[in-house]
Amino acid sequence: MSRTDKGSVSLEEGFWHIKAEPHIIARLANTITRTQPLDRTTARLKATDEASKDLDWFLQRYRLNVLSPDEMALRVARYHEVQEQMDHLHENNIDLTKFKMAKPPREYQAKTIEMLKLRGGILCADVVGLGNTIC
Image 1 (tube, rainbow, N blue to C red):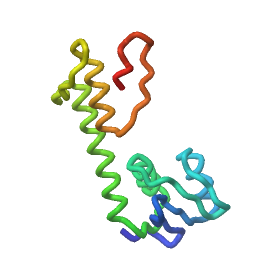
Image 2: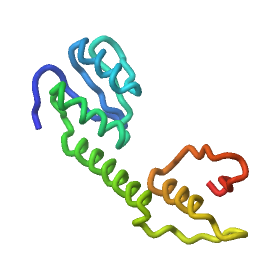
Image 3: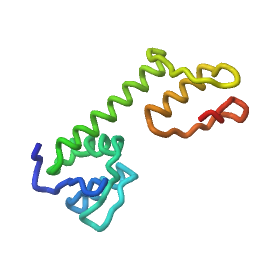
Image 4: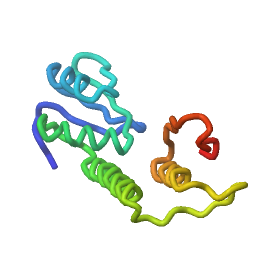
């Protein structure tokens, strides 16, 4: 998956390290706000599945040489797999986990637990009194 010699993307200690021309680093930082510019020609981005998907999208326009293409593809595929499962959850096409509470959980409570399991963490911003303590 060699792209060009305008720069490179490598995976080091849980971060994507991007080395490129200054205008590409500036565009990356403006496009993917989680990017941490280190200097004019280097930046880093935490190598989460979501950030990897965003970086892969960016690399469609700015064709840098990815030194770990298989790892990039794996992380992007995992992101899309979780998104597909979330879509199934929202379409009621997934079996909800059974769990015990003092009263049976409401459907939105059970869906919230499924989202928590799929994503590994969520921000539950329901109104007080809706039973969001279970999260």
